[in-house]
Length: 259
Ligand SMILES: O=P(O)(O)OC[C@@H](O)[C@@H](O)c1c[nH]c2ccccc12
Image (tube, rainbow, N blue to C red; front, side, top):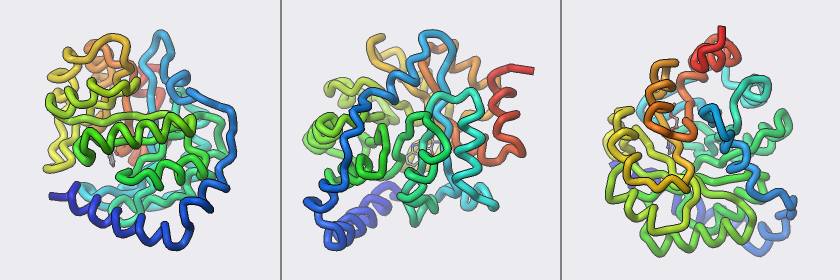
């Protein structure tokens, strides 16, 4: 299964990273920006659906998505567009991301940034903070309940927010037992790569109104956005559709229904 493969690989990488830069040293690089909750504030618009736009070069299911990939250009386009936050893939071997893309992107925008990676160790949460991320993704399918609580507590202590991703009812039940404020429903099954936007419809009814709900993956058109809005999601996470667009700014307008 691909998710297990990625996580196994990640465990080895984190072990090497810890040798290169021990946690104590990493902690010294963390600055307290005092900026808390920037991510959830930005995506709680109180009205229109919010968009988290992703910086994504490739994926294991699609291969290379964007050939002339320049994270700075993409960040600049997202900065000018009606998107509320930016997700940056930092996983190197399956998604061709890079940790340095976070500080790079932050140079070109003040919008909050989510670190999108396969986080299985506290070390990576400290790293996300040192890189300047406002939020991290945690994937319920990759973590035990105890690991989830530990990583969420670490994030909380650093003033970094968590988008907790689920794909099915069982994962969602586990997520709801934590105090995760932001729940992501991934329409893509990370075990099979099958994407079905109706996943959101199947799960959203279980989620109490006080949580922020983000629908992730496979969102391509204005119709998709309208459909998800109708289901009551607060926001969407979109990567490929923007990466394949000739103009990101035009694409954002198109799916928002702005002429
Ligand atoms: O490119 P898409 O289909 O718009 O999907 C974006 C995002 O949801 C997807 O990249 C994603 C969702 N959860 C993940 C976990 C790991 C890696 C990637 C992801």
